[in-house]
Length: 120
Image (cartoon, rainbow, N blue to C red; front, side, top):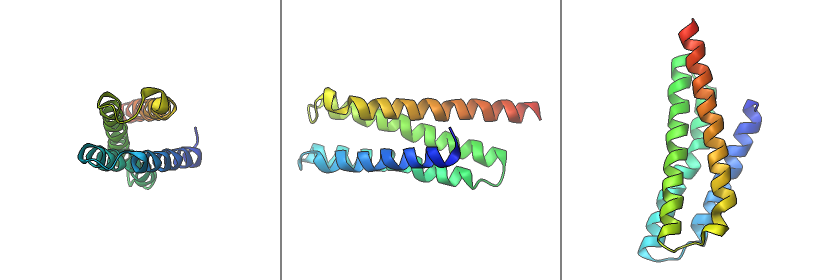
C-alpha cells in the first residue's frame, strides 16, 4: 500500500472512531471509554504522517512502532466497549476488522524496515 493511500485510510479510520465516540452513552463509562478510544484511534494517522517525515530509518521505525501501539490500544478499548455492554459487537465488527488490517500493514512495514536496517 502506498503512503498516500495509507494516510487516507488512517484518516477515515479516525473519522469512524470519532463517530463511534459520539454515539456512546453520556454516562461516566461511556464518556471515559469514548475519550480513550478517541485518543488511541485518531493518533495512528497523525503518527503515520510524522513517520513519513522521519529524519532517518531509525526515526521512521520508532514512529511506526507508535502507530502499532496505538492501534493495539484501540483494539483494547473496542473490547472494553463491547464487554461493558455499551455497543453490540456486531455493530463494531467492520471497524474492528479495519483496525486489525491496519495493524497488520504497520506490523509488516516494521518487519520490512528492520530487515532493511539489519542488512545495511
